Length: 513
Image (tube, rainbow, N blue to C red; front, top):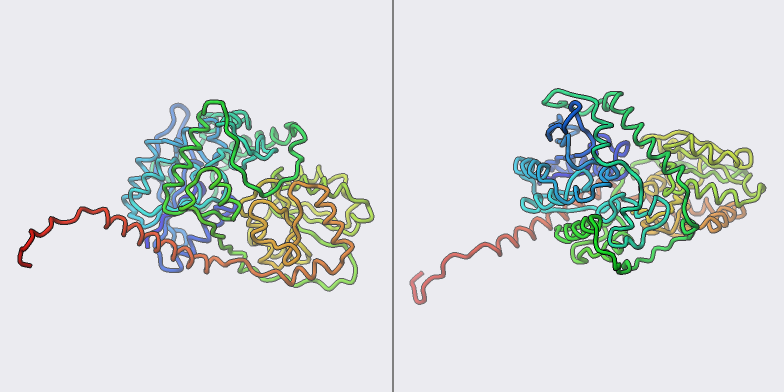
């Protein structure tokens, strides 16, 4: 089969640029190539080149094949990615005729059987419509971008959003520059008209610095912003309720959401990465007949299982991996630890490898010397994970939002570590309380503190949970699973096409065959 995978980030960058969704797309692309399929990837919206002045024309860069995967990128896209850069102009993600025409032209050349959107960031609804005219269209819900233009369903990146007020809550949600400002900040590098011929080095330093400075300023603003009313401290549940009706007239954000819901309902299949995500999108209006829960595979299944160290005494050693941002829950973890007495803290050791380590060190400064051990280091690569997991007793996934399906859970399981996780979003799909981990009420500092106290007074608990840990679904198995789905959908599309074709003229009655 010919499969086109669509995401805003480039396939060879994996999770390093584009997070878990791009890491997944990379793994899926390689799994499909290994099964003999022709795979292409298309990215858009995160690179603008040219000179000062009017926006440079849209370009299509064709990269040399990467590990058997053909790669294309739309440069100077009118729709920016990641979606935070497009936030101030929501209707740009509904219709972008220039991009849609170019995308349709590329699909005409590639002639795919399936177009599988991992994200619509950097593209538009019209691109999905162009794909539907030519192939089976599948959309995976790795995040909430289609119903939340800033992705996280967290108002002000602090409070869960359960009422978007016909788009008016979106309009006041976060402060971010207009798309043109983002382009101006990053448009400082020119290249030859043909573009690069192969993936490889990152953007030149000047481009990287300017992007970094812009994002850095925005992140500092988020961290410095007051958290708002105490509602942001309210514990969360996984209940899903329809949003209350609003008397306010729909604004452009509401128009965007309605169009996105209609687009999803028109796909051949919409894949929710967890059961909560499926229920949440159905409650928002996505056709229940096209959406299904399908857990993704993970290359973490290939990790060697870490052997537990034999220790008679010592603190429970906990590991946190990911980003130091509010919704991943590292600040909440610090709050919970501060509720514990020193005698309990001495029986806990924490290692955190995070993007944003400097801010994390500042937040945990008051716990240094009180914990049985504290290590905070900047970042890691996917290949580092088995080494980081070695010598630890459990992984921490303390999300304070409806985390769709955090791949950190798979990475811990791949290394044989049980997970201490929030009972929110997709986490309970994989972490079974008392079997392969422990769950606590999400965004509840007292509940997490009580659970941490428990593991210090039940010394055999984490070792017993380790025995219940099994490997996550492999990408090899998932590739076979996706191939079966693609073929099933392609056959159904062909049946519909055949049924819609006009039949030939009927034979006259009594004619001789």
